[in-house]
Length: 253
Length: 282
Image (cartoon, rainbow over all chains, first blue to last red; front, top):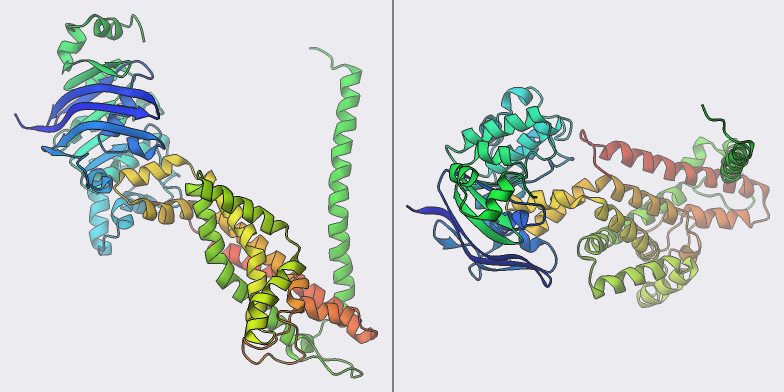
């Protein structure tokens, strides 16, 4: 099977502190991979390495390979900007651009990259992206309201629409529901199910029930290392490693 | 219910009274200046004040039309020179302000902000007036721009720093290059605060007299191009105020009032014009 995203021998540092140790994992196309583990285990660092956002932090660096469709995104001479356009990201807290309308937020990735598109072309992108993010019906009459005038859950779906508008191959989600209430969380989760038909998704979550609900594959991380990686059902029912079992049964973490 | 001790109540009253008293002390001079200016200035304001040139000594009447235009021209020149440099320097300090270079720039900006304006006048005299062999609007605008620089740079820096890093990350994660992120996300979000800083610096330089005395010099007539001497409200007020003529004293009061209103109205206009449909975070 051809892997969409493959991590090979990935190490990451913040200054002299090593946050990731020799990570190896591979996810197939159009599957959801959940990364779970206790706080500080390197989940967020790993997901940020997948679109080269890790190196945005001063003194942060990474070694190893991350293959996207077989091409190393850490290849020398490759501009991280190109990688990020193919691997979209949704963050922990909804972060729509406060100076832009809902419409402009969705097409921000296109506009800020200098893409010249007609108004009608942009409007089509906005509708498609908002529909994909299950937000269209709620905001279609108010596209010129501020991006921060809507509720937190809607803002997060707006951020998902914004990430989808640039038509990425992979969507990374870094605890996308941790700042949301249960109803908004449920909406995002059902959205993930729908998006799976078109995108490869990697999601970091603190919530083990969520991982069990939304993912096909689960990676359990501890102290910067990947402890176990496999089909979600197996990780939660018959884990091979003692640490995994302790964590998923709630004995620590 | 517990009762508050008498001592705490007394301390509370005393502290509150002290705070109120200090606020009044701050506000009184402002109200007095503005009130006195209105009182003295309004009576001398007339239509001809805005349309006519100053009359020769001995003749009553005339106006400061040339000085009003002159001040607007000088501030415009200062802005076109000082704002791009100041804003970009501020963005540099705010976005890439960790290194040694930034430390030096920041330190220099702070020192520059403390340099007396008359010294900046001499600086402009040496650098612009002497090589150009004459007083000019350019020299005056240059001197004012130098005064604007540190104010604009430092307020821009503070405003840029207030923009949450999550917005930068959101933009970078969309595959937007850093320079576009800085320009279209960071600066745009900080816009309101940056404009406030710009207006503060405009208000400051519009009233500067010392650096204009031997750069823009002054002119009793309409200025002949930007390479010649040009009149300005502060210098005109200064000249008229130290003269022995009652009519000129009245005109100086009117000039002071007009200067104040000019600054006030420009700030107001800029605020209204730049107010977008969507709010900015800072």
